[in-house]
Amino acid sequence: MKPWGACLCGLRRAAMVAYRWVSPLALAALACSQAGQQARRFESEEISFDYPPGWQTIDQVFPGQDLGQDRRFNAQEIAIVVDPDSSTPWEKYTVAVHLLKKTLPPNASLEELFHQTYAEMPPPLDEVSESRTTLGALPALEKVYRQPLGEPWIQLRDLWVERERGIYILSCQAFPADFDKLQADFATITDSLAFIMIGLFQQTEQIFARDNASVSLRALREKLYYDNHVYHHQHCQWNPFRHYGRHNQRQPSGNSTLRHL
Image (tube, rainbow, N blue to C red):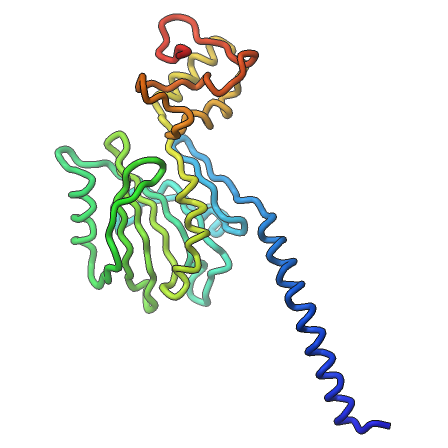
């Protein structure tokens, strides 16, 4: 009979062999499971975007809490999505994306307000980079920086765009050590963000209600985003009918600006 020490060594070796085979398989299965999950969708009257599976809107994290005023930017919160798995003993979450809106003052430019806002923020503010990019198919200003959130510091990436004399600010936040690893999650939101032309949508809604058109308003709304597939550059005019088959088309009557091109 083998001594207990030899038996334990044998069991340990067998366990290590099993781990080397099972662990990669388990990780692969977990990766496939996560890859198969669909991004979630946020929609409002002004914007639409996808956000990662497992993330939640702020009202799911804090039931009954309404969106309010963001004091750092003096802007109205219009959407907040967070990663609930980023909680700490002191914070419900540390990874989040905030979407804010504020009015552009008369005789002011996006760039002027952008620089003025950060100049007036209380120190410390450790700037990482500043550049120009796009957001929702619109030109955007980008700032990456670090600020203290209580005792720990967080890293933020803010994207500013101007639309119809309004300023939209999309702000991504995470701990500096985690920020680069979260770029794919942040890109799920920034790459899918779309703005809706509110005035034209309301006008089209009235026309469709009057004409009892067969195309659903939800489907139409999806086609009214700032997107090169819908916007007709040559005529500088929206054409929400061009993506539907002729059997689905019902043209507005009268002298509508939504005539078929």
